[in-house]
Image (cartoon, rainbow, N blue to C red; front, side, top):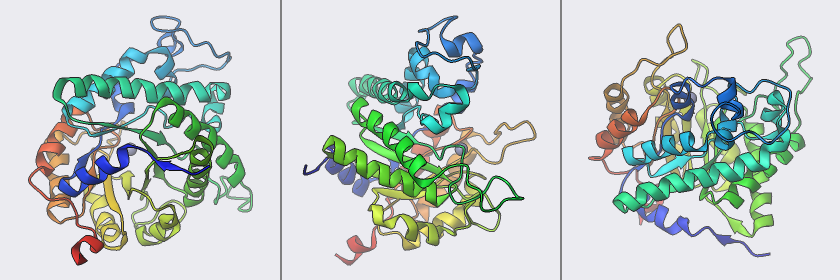
Length: 347
Ligand SMILES: [Zn+2]
């Protein structure tokens, strides 16, 4: 079957040439603010009761809220969209059989992904009906809680808790659900182990072939180490060389230590990648209680610095960032032109 490109590709590329695209902020932070309990997570208190059988507690299974509290998730997407996000991430960071195994909900994965894309689409359509601005659903594909190229056991460095094919199959089910639900892009994010990301890229290509459609892929790594490397030991340039074959719509960095620590690594990436760049840092460093204190103006001012240096094509926020952060970021980067690709400069 020959693949056709998703209809959003031309519009996205055209907008990306004109201005910096805005992503949303942290779904997890907004969910935390709701103060939900076990009954809310399962939908057996308020909401839509979960129809998938499991004996394990669900509090903390944020992705399940797509099924059990869909109005709340839709409202969060809508708030980010109205704040200025062009691209909104589905609530599917942990919606793989591997990550859902912690909650006994491997069987819910298809529903979680299909519904998450639909809920996001509904929220964005509501926002677009209000202001006429086109918006895009990015199907969020998280790293899972296992690493394919490292051992979790220091006394047994050859051991692996997951294989490439185990990841590939889990990601394929997830991405298939996201496509069926209507996602416009696939966002492989918070990559700490590049081998996991490569399994997700492979799975995305398999899912595209099965569905007969190719979605733009966004790829985002995370630098967790003060030496400027991913957990699996790569510098930003090495990371790019490992994923460039996917011909991604964008490559960038997210999460981790906040915008200040991310800046030199984004500068390195922006200097080597031949596609769009994307940055969505946390709201600074977490405090002793794991909360983020960096206010919207502070995050926005730092990201405006990125934009002024010409490092950015897509920008948003990760952990700790709220709709107020996204509104401030969108306003702060608006005066600056998007980063120019080398091939455009040459033309
Ligand atoms: Zn984060």
